[in-house]
Length: 471
Ligand code: ADP
Ligand code: GLC
Image 1 (spheres, rainbow, N blue to C red):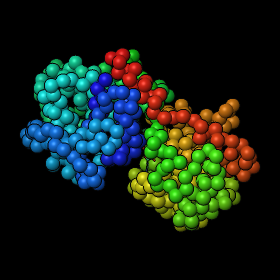
Image 2: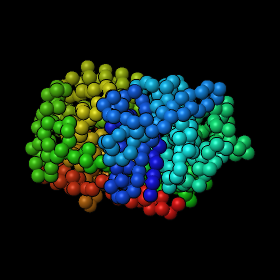
Image 3: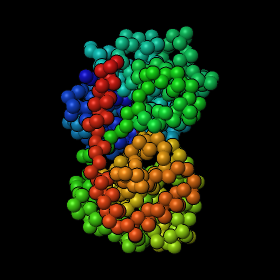
Image 4: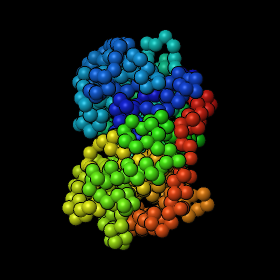
């Protein structure tokens, strides 16, 4: 089959979170399984672009509102990622370094989708599947069916993957005038509460909708930031397919960022070396269990609860733990996490920012990974942690519920708690500290058990292929 993935992120070209990891891996495994998978994404001004040879595949113009944009489709020449990568260069929209958070994001991603359709409309053949990821690409299924210029693409099957239903790409209803001319009788398909809602339009128009875990799909029926009704009405075409992890990138035996490589046999010794290295750097005590948080510093991830939870956990354990946080996001949460350092010197430290290298080092060095998410559609961190022998402590929600079994249960290997509250997080940390200090053998056994769990992409990859074939 020929599958085109459309996405705003793809690791290592541009990544802000798990979306990048997924789109950087799934197509590679689809190609390995004998399919033709391609990724089309915006050409941001990132180092990848200068470091790789790109060839001009196509160029043309399109109109958005009253403005004409010139665009080029640039193909990465040497298949560096294990699949064909196409970058859409649109001066005026993407000639900036950042991925998101510009005032004109709605226009930027609309322009990206129009350029893609302008390119595909003149292809001599049709791909089997256009697979759209999140709201930045979610107008494509509607446009392929109801915009006059692209209606001959309507027979191509479309799939939407909802990585995070909280972000829907809302635009004022006036922005509908920016869309390529479409059948006005169908305008109800892009509209939601008097606004243009790209995610809603794709839930209605895509041939299939997937979420990145089964539990998340169930949760969306009741909590989908207004779109519950759509997830219920279109349930018949919705599927939960759990993400996998790229075991080539996330492998403690070969990870390019690690100073100490390891496997199940030498995990205890090598993790201790990694912990000592990190603790020295962040002035923490490596004789204590190291708890880390890696992620976006936003309420969705429960990051705002960390300062109180960490203080409580430290007071309850009489300072017997070390905490390290890596994250960026909400400025207020960042400030709270930053100022905690002055109160908890030697016990807690943080790096406010984004660092791929530090994240890998932290997965390797830590004893426990904290994920107190309020919402977690899938979550990749806990799966990386499992592979790196770091026990995940997670709130029972979404994909965390589907991947982590509490060690109190038969065959369990992580810690789960129910509520997104500082109290629940703190008591889970105390339970973890007890496991670390008083039940050393169980602690080591759990590590072995976790590291043997297989979350590689093969299984999920074949679920996607089965879904495409069913369409
Ligand atoms: P989300 O996509 O919601 O942020 P995921 O768990 O799916 O959550 O994926 C997060 C990804 O982003 C992981 O690869 C994680 O290591 C990475 N990550 C998040 N924050 C940072 C950061 N500040 N520095 C480095 N990597 C980060
Ligand atoms: C989103 C979700 C996260 C998921 C990721 C990849 O960012 O918040 O839970 O793992 O997408 O699908």
